[in-house]
Image (tube, rainbow, N blue to C red; front, side, top):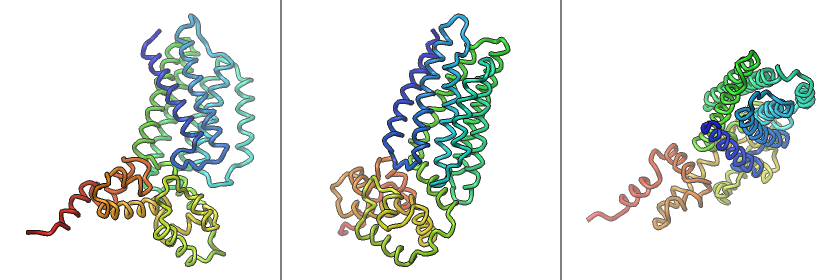
Length: 342
């Protein structure tokens, strides 16, 4: 059996298990509708099963898609769409047609001729990616990262088109081994891309959800005392220092204020000119700045964690962005300046 194919399948299955644990556990405050969370788990399970199916393609003398394989591919395409739809839609934004889509996809997977099933499933996946790109484009005025998100979704769409094309070539008589190798490589590449995104832009989902909440908000604060709520918000962060909790989320703070998440998003944006994630990061950085000087024996990492950051990388990136230098350099410079000369 092809060793490269085995390695790609093993890597993909391992990543699917890891990401499923992240998604199920709500890591990094992934506040998603339950439909999207469930869909994400279905997608990951489907991708792992698909990769294992590719090993069967590689070992069978005359391999061709089975009905089970086809159903899995259809469901993983639907899972991909539903997962990201939950990120790019406001709360309560699920529509009836999207509920019907699940039934329609399953019925199509069971009824379509096997020879056409794979290209059709992946073409639908490409169409889903295109629709998600449209939703991301609507955030262009609110998210400086939207270009990254748009490129990632576009890349996933191109991957689906490439696999659909390889499925058509396989159906035309060029064999299913090449299709299996192509699809396995692109799934592994997709997992690698997702892993890189989670490490390099750890708060990508919260930032996007924040932009969505603001983009769809419509006069949510009409009956709210903005000044009183803004003052209470300052008290929570400046005096009670709730930002030092790593698990702090938009929903948690909204509950403290008796507001909806939409209302809190609009309040922070209109009263402070910031998105909620950036508002929290600024307070965490300010707390860390004070601790670095007041507690010179504490390690830089322990200061970052005590200020509310959940990793060294996120602490360093936020601190450098706001202060202009990394925490260790800031501490050395300030402490050196405070030493008496002579």
